[in-house]
Image 1 (cartoon, rainbow, N blue to C red):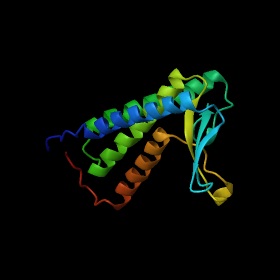
Image 2 (cartoon, rainbow, N blue to C red; image 1 turned 45 degrees about the vertical axis):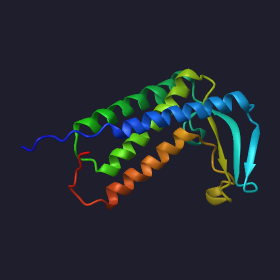
Image 3 (cartoon, rainbow, N blue to C red; image 1 turned 180 degrees about the vertical axis):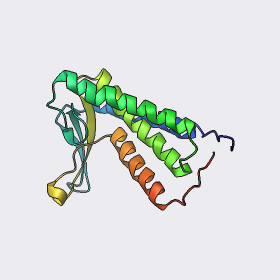
Length: 173
C-alpha cells in the first residue's frame, strides 16, 4: 500500500489572506457607502461600486425564509460542508494540484460569507455590480463581493481541472 501523500497547506494560507481581504473590503464599504447607494461607476455603466445587503445566498435565494431556516440552511449546513471538505482535502491525495488551490478558494469564499452571516445579522455585504447586457434576462449581474468571486473562480477551476487533468495523477506539494 503506497504511503499517503500530505497535501500542502499553502492553498489555505492563500485562503486566509483572501478572507482578510474580503472582510476589509466589506468593512470599508460598510463605513463609507450608504446602503443602496452607488459610490463609483467605471467604463460608462459597466461597473458600479455599491452597497447592498443580502440575507439570502447567491442571487438572494432564501432571503425571505424564516430566521430559523435561514440559520440552518445558510449557516449550519454550509459550515458542515466546508468542514467536511477541509477534512477530505487533508485525508486524500486524489485532488490535482489545481483542484487543491481551487478548494482553498472555495473554502476562503465560504468562510468570508459565513463571517458576515454570523456577525452581521442584517446580511452579507455585496458591493460589486457589473452590467450583463440582458443575458439570461439580467440587465446587471447580481451584486457580489470578494468571497463570492473566490467561490465562483474556485468552482470553475475545480471542475475544469477535473475535466481536463489526466486521470489518476494525484499530486503532492
